Image (cartoon, rainbow, N blue to C red):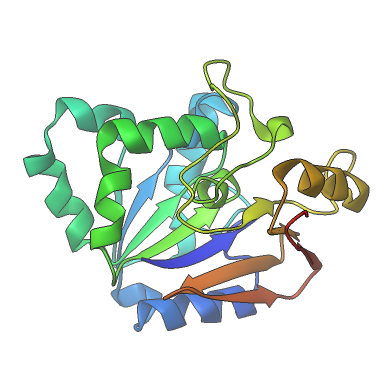
Length: 219
């Protein structure tokens, strides 16, 4: 897939331009699916509703898509892949809400979506916070809220970890990012809400109008 891994959505013109570049067409000509699943362990149903309806300061679903559907991962195992896989294949972009990345990881595996992703080379994945972190190898124990999570490991579809919301006091300070990076053992990026990371064919680029830092792998 083509990845746009954000901390807080499409917050500025640079990230928006990166999104359009990955899509290869305007947002208004693109069909989107949104995944609210990660919100439930932390934000609950109100957070999921705000994400789906675009009633949030984290720009994702309200960008003016040609069409927008909701893909609730917890429902997919009872529907059958013959029903929902075509929905995913027909989408130009998948918008993935934040919350708990380990819960999202669990349902991506249970639903079968995780196994489907490698067969979607032209689809754009736009993650918001946990929606970005779920594709990394580890999220760090401080970012695990789901009580049933066995550990902080996630899908590992990229080879770096992400510390989101850099600069958001009191917890997401650079000092705490440094401690977190030592735990996950890198490579890793700390990014603020004005920053995103694109990944296309293994090439990583940082798109930022804010603050970010790369941590090399611990040795």
